[in-house]
Image (cartoon, rainbow, N blue to C red; front, side, top):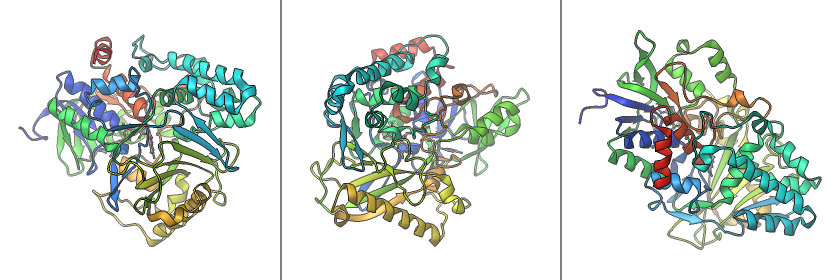
Length: 509
Ligand SMILES: Cc1cc2nc3c(=O)[nH]c(=O)nc-3n(C[C@H](O)[C@H](O)[C@H](O)COP(=O)(O)OP(=O)(O)OC[C@H]3O[C@@H](n4cnc5c(N)ncnc54)[C@H](O)[C@@H]3O)c2cc1C
């Protein structure tokens, strides 16, 4: 086989996050030659896992929705030929998520609209109308996103202005004066790092609908999606390379990219290039001078979602029972308030889950606790860099900072699970810097660019750029999450493949 640097590929994809892998799969299966270049030692971006104390920890995927038979992700995974190979654990039908408040009260989300509504009506019998209206609105909003329903219509995959302008908090508050119900309905807003004044309702709706349509965990870790996708791509003739950091590009006289330049100076030639990296970083890599000022300023001026402090606990053997549901814990009544924390009261809001490990179905080996963290908290160490590929050092003070934050999280989690501390074998954590370094964005943003219901069009990023053979994909483009990124990657590929035929292949898969 010719070497990577000797060939000219139809497509060179920068980054092997899910978006890069999905584009790679689609294009390779359409007969194109594809090379995916990944800077890290592990492919998958947020799908990467790491292991400590013989336990696997997920970094950026805890559960997925829309996996019931006939649902969209189920069908996409069938098209990728990975559905029957993925090891999936269906979460509890009667409670896949629990919204828990500081007073100890718990509200369970059940799977399926009927069961979900029934439970909520049991908690809030006076609010039957509001609950029905809320669910109907979610369905109505989701029906307006054609690709989520495996339909292709027109050019735009993000619908009308009124819908994009609808604010999640404002809409939910308009349904009922019952403040607790408002907070229960928005209780899993960590899934999109919800900001009261900004988060659009469509984001809430697409994500809620997805989890109500079949919530599953990945048995033994989410990296299996990346592993299975990469096998599929290779079987189709595609090539995936690790330790290949793209740092620049060369252009011809007509303004087309001829090749990307790797950190070690090697060049990889291609006809078309797809960047799976944050668009602001893409502009830096491909050269600011090739983009219009107005575009550059808009992209670089966009706010990203907040980052995270992710705590991983490993347990002494057979001490903590596995939970087949997640918990969204709020130590304040207002679920929109936890993101705007101060140091004294942090963490007020966090997500708790126990990964499912096949060798022990009764007890959990570990727990993930995801809290919010502003980038400013780790700003002091922003000049340092550390990944497995580039193992730089960070100061003792940084490690002390992490330990202090871990201790604060453990103190809170002890309130939720009294006695848990004695069951913990070890504690590990990841900061905004960890995410920044492994993902290659600027600030370790949880879910990429922050969507804003006040100016929705500003945060809608076209997959095509002014450079004629440079396209974009990934969580920053239209939606984050396994489903959102998959859909975004299809939109990217519609520039090269007949969209009707492609979606028909998905439907027929
Ligand atoms: C803590 C956390 C929990 C989450 N939980 C869930 C969940 O439970 N369910 C869910 O559906 N979603 C979840 N998400 C979101 C989901 O993981 C992401 O939206 C999705 O995986 C992003 O995919 P992407 O295609 O944008 O690529 P990314 O994952 O952002 O990957 C980009 C890739 O590009 C590579 N790269 C960057 N720069 C370069 C370069 N110069 N050269 C070469 N390669 C480069 C990076 O190394 C990386 O591999 C979570 C995210 C986080 C952070």
